[in-house]
Length: 177
Ligand code: 5GP
Ligand code: MG
Image 1 (cartoon, rainbow, N blue to C red):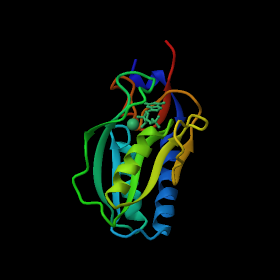
Image 2: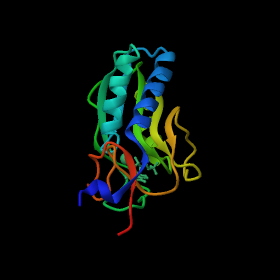
Image 3: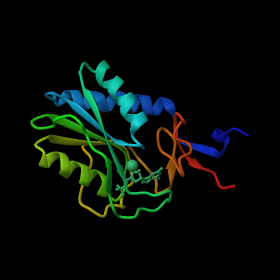
């Protein structure tokens, strides 16, 4: 049985594409200067790629960089620690940076990255595909949010469980065996 069969769809491809267009238009409304997208790996790679295309269609000319941060180690619970596995390579001083992550949960990951880039002189806006309300351990809200997500462990559209399911074009929940 294909893997897709075991994941129930929470946010489908069409809904995600529509939301990406809306987010890109909201970003364009801010008239960002020297726009740099910083995507937090690995979970946001697919969202960031689609958002880059949506930003192009919204008339912007963003550049892109990646930070690889990790607070999960093959587990479905956060360790509470954020580690830098890869840093951005471009300068960020005086640039409008849109920091992209897949899910805003405790807020530790995005708060850590935002503080780091702001300390280097960037003007940082934050953008998360999903937000799980009521789960915050640090005080931070994203400037742009795709969807509010129920308190379930989701996979797909870049997000994994034990390295699997990142390729799915939708966000879903792994069904119990
Ligand atoms: P935070 O630092 O906000 O607690 O954690 C956010 C990170 O935890 C996300 O970038 C993501 O990597 C991971 N995460 C949180 N909830 C989920 C989930 O439901 N599914 C997956 N695959 N990762 C999650
Ligand atoms: Mg992540």
